[in-house]
Length: 82
Image (cartoon, rainbow, N blue to C red):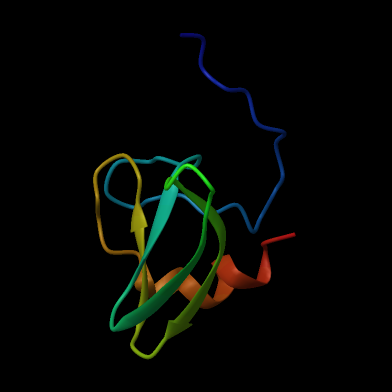
């Protein structure tokens, strides 16, 4: 796999201070209510129609490479989602 080349001079690029990862991240939401809606088909099987999600707890940000807690950067992360 070839390393990804990033343009220089991007001051707001998030990178993990532990491992240097600057590409893959994940969020973990605590106290989540997930409601899934289904329709039963004539053959008895089910088709997924939609989901609704209600997050009642904290949402944390983690490095996708080393799983370091990066929640201190979560606000900046949210501002950069387009």
